Length: 193
Image 1: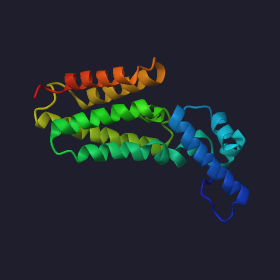
Image 2: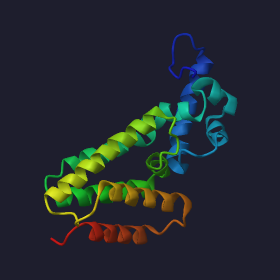
Image 3: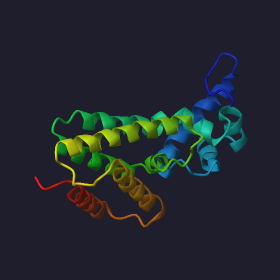
């Protein structure tokens, strides 16, 4: 893969192209998702698609180069914020609400959750962190008697993936309907207080 670092060996115009591609990719991926045609990223950066391949090796290299700025930092923040909530029921509600919110706001999150680009090491590492957090959250929820009996980490993952598929390929609901459905999800997985 071509180097994406601005090194002394890159000409000034080449460094400028790398910077423009990175900025454009962050914007376009955040707005439209990681599956957006690379021609749109190239047009936003005012470079050719070939320049993206020359500088980043293609879509996966570009995703790896900008994933933190596109979604990874926000996803890690959602996990960190949930970890800071002391009471388990509140932690689960906070996390489910936050992850569903970010799925609605940032289409690229759904591409990450669906593992659309398994060759992206950065994306797969982010999925591993999220999966481990889901597993721990479900274990904590059962230990505290907060989650309904039989609810598993696989169920938690399926709810998140089902939502990602619905948002990516289905009819996008209004925000108020979406938030109302989030409360139904929480009401279904959590025991009555």
